[in-house]
Image (tube, rainbow, N blue to C red; front, side, top):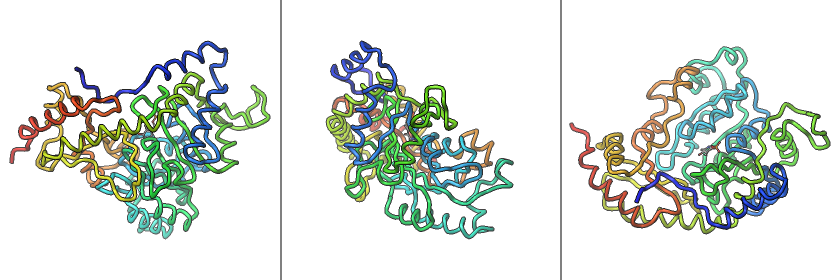
Length: 399
Ligand SMILES: *Cc1c(COP(=O)(O)O)cnc(C)c1O
């Protein structure tokens, strides 16, 4: 029995759906993507869904649709997968980080309020929120705050009531990175619809998979048309194959992927329930291990979409030593997330240092993602938890 870090959950009907497509000549932009998009309108109630070939591509198109450009400021968090920050950098805009809530890893909305206020005030008050070094292109022309990009970390939506309140007060766009939260809910409202734009992703470790793929949802008609054009080499409605109204990309989702995604969407409840069951097993079997804090679900999260199962170890435990001991027992685990501001390219571009975002760094130092997927068995969960119980004493830091 080899325990895997993550594993897609495909059945015969899913595989058959892909096989059906390869028997037709329509391998890109055919009926499957239309149906896959419709499934997202049905799930979220959004007016538009736009399929793309990755979550990153989806986030990038939202940045373009929100007209975020050179020198614009976008407020986001450093406790995420790098894509949520990178899409801001693609347009030479400046990510302004705020730290996160220690319980959820989601944006700290008190800090958000403070940073938006200070940045609109300008001068020294604003300066302390900005990166130490700013690339030359931006030093001369820093603009005002344009957008907020919160992340629904580990399947739990960020706190959107205060986020949207601040956004409407200052006229900011909200781009929801819901790439980890398909099917999650905030106060009864479905993840992905909590801002102006929402984005999902379908890499094989996500709740549903298309191999590679992503989906944008929005109620904005004009933005939807624009993003559909940009994903298809900038061809606006009415353009011919060699007419390009905009500077676009090839962010199209192919038909095989869309067919797989459509079939997986039909199983969404089942897939989410299986993941929730695995999470409950972990909760049960980890309860006796004092040095381990399980994921904390806040009351605003009326439905969790279990994406990963990330524990926090006590300060007395050497997390990296624990990870090593578990790997020796063939239990794969992974530190998750590694703070974005301390990635080599971010340090080089912006001069970030240890200590800049202490909550993110503490989570980064003490978090461990355990093996997780809907196809895990109770026996496998028990094996992982026993491994942790056996290793945790040996991983205590010596004083
Ligand atoms: C998975 C993920 C993405 C998108 O990833 P892709 O590999 O581009 O599909 C973006 N943000 C977060 C937080 C993610 O977990």
